[in-house]
Structures are given as structure tokens and as C-alpha cells.
Amino acid sequence: MRIDLDSYREILDTLTRNKARSFLTGFGVFWGVFMLIGLMGGGKGLREQLDKTFEGFAQNTVIIGAQQTTKPYKGFRKGRWWSMDYKDIDRLKQRVPELDVVVPMLFSQWGGSNTAYYGDQKTSPRIQGTLPEQAKVIGPKMYYGRYLNDMDIREHRKVCVIGKKIYKDLFKEGGDPCGKKIRVDSTYFEVIGVDYSSSNNVSFNGRAEEQITMPITLMQALFNRGNEVDLIAATGREGVVMSKITDRIRETIARAHYVDPTDEQGALVFNTELIFQMIDNMFKGVNFLIWLVGLGTLLAGAIGVSNIMMVTVRERTTEIGIRRAIGATPKMILSQIISESIVLTLVAGMSGILFGVMILQMLELANTEDGIVNTHFQVNFWTAIFAALVVATVGVLAGLAPAARAMSIKPVDAMRDE
Image (cartoon, rainbow, N blue to C red):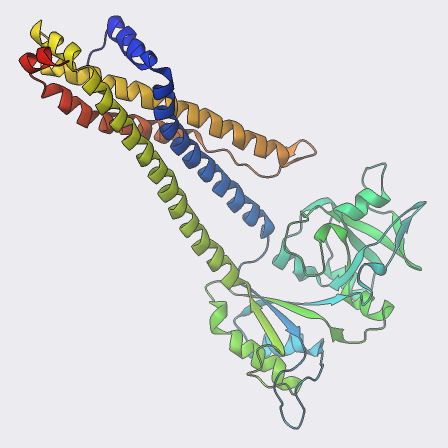
């Protein structure tokens, strides 16, 4: 389809002849493209935020906790409080061989009421004790130093790993704090690492950036907790479906503490596989909804363009008749009407793309911390190209019916039209 400069001028003249009508017609296409780009970018950013929340966290993990029983068992009434102990680690390893890593966790009974000091600076951390294998479950982001190791456990070293907020509160001058000693209440600990895990990441004891992590054996002694364990995190071996062994895990722990093995609330076994499956299914539905809403809105805009072009053809009946009378072929008329439709939809569509990209860029700037973009909301280049192609296709389709109407006009009838 060949369009010369005069044709472009004629198209521009036709579209600007009634500016208000052209604007309102193109707004439907503009809004449809903007909705499609905005929803796709927003959905991408939301998915990235959720992915970062679980970043480094083992997907095949179960969290085991002791809660108030809801069923009576072997002479014990329901409503009894109970607790797990260190022996449960060996029980799980022996009776559930499908498990790979089994890690106990112990938390300070006073939560955030502990106080940590370094010089004149102080902060209120959350204290947790665990084993080095915990790194295989949560995937800490070590900014300085290292995580706990086996020697720390065996030698009961007074060492700790601090979170991002604890580091910034205590070491305001910055720099590597490893080797320096901080005081937690009345006990001194050597800092061996700084964990820069995001505050949005999965954590078992409040926000990761507010935690101080120490060897569980040291915490048991300092806080007089004996062999008590607050939570147990366990990951499955490769290929193991955790939902198939959840009941066996619950039974192993429950029977050792005289808890009904069918008491799912009393002996809590939380399977993270279900969360990841739910997220995947949710975003499949979200993506489908995004395309449904975006393309539906775009289709509504295309119908509006087609209707207005039909009105325009009706108003230009005499003009089209004169063109036919002086030698214009049906192909020329078809080319003119479709070209007008494509130009209108492309201008409106590209404006929608640019406006959508601008809004997404503002969202990215709002999610920037320390000059680093935390969440990317922008659509990629090929998505924008695809959107432009969709707009062009919509323009062609919107112009087909008006073009067919224009081609059907006979010169004689058009000359008689008032």
C-alpha cells in the first residue's frame, strides 16, 4: 500500500477537521493500550516483589511448631501447651529419611525488648539461635563477613551475625564491623557477619534486618532454655514432594510429646510448597486477567474508531462519489479510509504506551532505596513492540467496515447525495 506525501496531508486534514471527535475517538484506544501496558508492568513488579520476599528461601521447606492442642490424647486434655526439644532433630532424621536439612531455632522470650550496645549507640534487636545449616533454608545475603559455622557451635563461641538495621544503628560510621564486639544486655559478642537480607524477605522471628543470630548452643546456655526448641525448619531432598511426607513428620513429633498425630493445629507443620504453588497459580490468573482487561478495553476503543469512521464516510459520501467519478479506483478509496484509521489508532496507541511507561517509571523511582531500584515495573522492549503491532492491527480491522462502506458507494448515487 503506497502512500505519498499528499495522502499524508489529506489524512491529517481529515482527522483535524473535527478535533474533538478525533480526540474522543482516539482516547478509547489510548486508554486500552495504557491499561494493557500499566497492568503488565504492575503485574511484573508485583511478581518481582513476591519473588524477592522468598528469595533464597528453600521452596521445599516445612516449618514445624508446637501450639496448644485441640484434641485429647492418652489421658491429656485438649488445650495443653507443649514444646519441642533438641532430640526431635534426631527423631526426624532417623524416621523421615526424605529430609535433607533439619534445623532447630530458638528465639529470645523477650522478643524485641533486648538491647544491643556498641559504644554510645544502642538498638533493640530480636535474638535468635540456630545452626549453620539455617543458611540452606533462608539463604542470607552476607554483606560483610560470614554466617555461622560448625566451629562456632562446637566451641560455644560468643559470636553473632547482625541484620542490616542493627548494623546501621550501631555502626553509624559504616565500614566492616567484623571482629568488633557488641554488648547484648550484659553479654559481649563478636560480630562475624552482616546479613543484608531485605526486610520483606521470609523470616521466622520478625524482620530479618532487625535480628541478631547466634549459635543455638550458646543461646540455650545464656537464656537458660535447656534443650527446648521453638521452631524446626526442614527441607526435602531433591525430587521429594513435601506434601507426601507432611503427615509422617507431624506424627514423628507429636507421638514423642503425647500429642494426637491427627491434631494439625496442635502440631503445626506448615508446607511452603503450597505457598509457591499458590503464587504461581495466582499469577497465571492475574496474567490472564491483565490480557483480558487490556485487550477488552482496546477492542472497545477499536469499535469506537470503526463507528466514527463509518460516520466520517457517511459525511464524505459526495466527496467519495466525486473521487470515483474522476477516476479513483476502489483500491484507492480502501487505502485512504484504512490509512486514516491506522494513523488515528497508532497516534492514540503510541501515546498510551508512552504514558504507561512514564507512570511505571514513576513507580520504579518510588521503589528506589540507596540509589538501587528494589522493584522493576517497566515492560520490556519486545512487549512494547508487540503492543504497537496490536494497535496497528486494531487500526486495520477498525477501518475495514468503513472502507467497505466507502467502496460500495456508486458515483451516481453519491453525486445525488445532499
